[in-house]
Image (cartoon, rainbow, N blue to C red; front, side):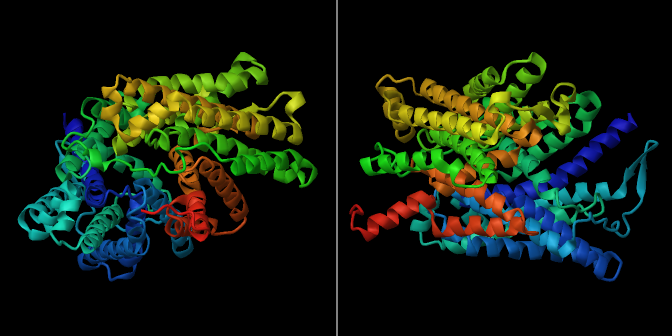
Length: 617
C-alpha cells in the first residue's frame, strides 16, 4: 500500500513541474493565440542558467533558491526579447506563421546553449535542506518531491489570485475572451502581450530551474518536454490555468501508474488520453469552444484562380530544365534534387488541406511515415517488388488518414492540429515500441530500389516523374468542383451546409487524399534512403512540412514547392557548419519577419506593387 502512495506522490511531484511549464504556454496562447514552440527551449534555458548560477553562487539555501529565481527572471527577459523583436512584427500574419518563427528560435537557442554550456549533460546539486528522503510506511520518498508538490499548489494559488484579484489579471482574462473589444476600450494590447510573454516565459524557466535536483540538464530537454506540454494544455483547455493543473495531474499520474500496468504502451498513453478528451470534449476539460472568428483567415486572391499562361510556360520551362539537369550538374546534386522532389510532394499534400481546406495538421508526418514503413514492410516481409511497394505505400497511408481523419475533421483550428499531432505520436510510439517488426529505434534497413532503378540518374527521373504527377493531380483536384466545395466550406461552412453539401464528408475526403499523396512521398523517401527509422514520423518531420508550406507561401500554388526547395537546400548547405542550427534558425526568422506571406506570396505582392497591378483596397 505504501508503494502505491509513494508512486502517487511521485506522480504529483511530476505534475507540479509539468504544470509550471504548461501554465506558461496556456497563458501565452490564451491571450496572444501564439502556439509558442520555443516554450520548451525556455524550459531548457531555465535549467542551464540555473545550473550556472547555482554552481557559481555560494552554496546554501540563498544561493540555490536565489539562482532558481534569477534564472526564471532571465528566461522571462529572453521571452520578452523574442516577443518584441520577432512576434510583434508578425502578429497580423496567419497564426501558424508565428509557430514557424518560434521554431526558428528553437534552433537558435539550441546552438546558443551548445556554445555556452558544451555538449555534455550537466548534473546540478541537490536542494539544500531537502536532499534526504522521508519514510512513508517503510517506503522512501525524496524530500524534494514534497517541495515540488507544495510549490505546484503555491503557484496555482498565486496565478489564481493574480488573474482574479488584480486589474491586470482581469485585462488578461478579457483578452482571452475578446481581444478586439479590449482594443476598442483603449487598452494597450502591445504592452499586455509583452507582459504575458514575460510571465509565461518566467514560468517555463522556473519549471526548468526546479528540475535541477531531479534530473540532469541536457540539450534534449526542449523537444522532450514540448510534446507533453502541448498535451497538458490541450487536454486541460487552451488558456485555462486550472485546466492545465488538472491535466498535468491526470497525465503525470497516468505515467506514474501506467508504467506498472501498461509498460508496453507508456509512450502512447498520454496521447490516447488526448484523443479521448478531444473527441468527447473538443475544447478540453475546462476550456471554452473557439469562436468562429478565431480560426485561420486566408487570402484567397491567388489560390482562387488557375495559374496564368505565363506561369504555366514558366513551370514547363522549369520541368524541361530539371529533365536536362543530369547532363549539367555533378551526380551529387541529383541526390539532393531527388530529396527536393519528394519533399515538394509531401509539402504539396499538406498544402492541399491547409491552403485549400483551412485544415492545419501538426501530425502530417504520420502519413509520410506510414507510407515509408508500409513500403519497407511490403518489400522486406512480403518480398514485394519495388514497383508495387511504392504504390502500396500510399494505400497504407490512406488507410491511416481514413481512420484518423474521421476524428480530426470534427474539430477545427488549433484543436484539430493538436489531435492530428496526437495521432502522429501514436503512430510514432507504435513504430518505436514494435521493434520486432519495425526495428524500433534502429529502423528497417535494406529498403533499396529494384536493380533497373538503382542508378542515381534513373531514380532521379523516376522521382521527378512521380512527384510531378502527384503535384499536378493535387492541383487538378484543387480546381475541380470538389476542390471548390472544400474551399467554400473553409470560408463559410454554414452556407455550404445550407445548400446541401456534406461539408464534413468533403473535408474527410480531402484529408484522405492528402494522406495518400504524403504516403506516396514517404514510399519514395524509403527507397531513396535505403532505411526508414522513427525520425520519419516524429514531430520535427511534421514541423518540416509546415515550414515548407508557410515559408513558401500558403496562399499560393507554387509556395510549397519553393518552400521545399529552400528548406532542403538550406539544410543541406548549412549542415557543414558547426552551429548550423543557429544560422538556419536566423534565416527562418528573417523570412518570417521580412516576408509575412512567404517567399512566393511576398515576392508576388512586391512585383504587383512595382508594376502597379496591386488591387485597390
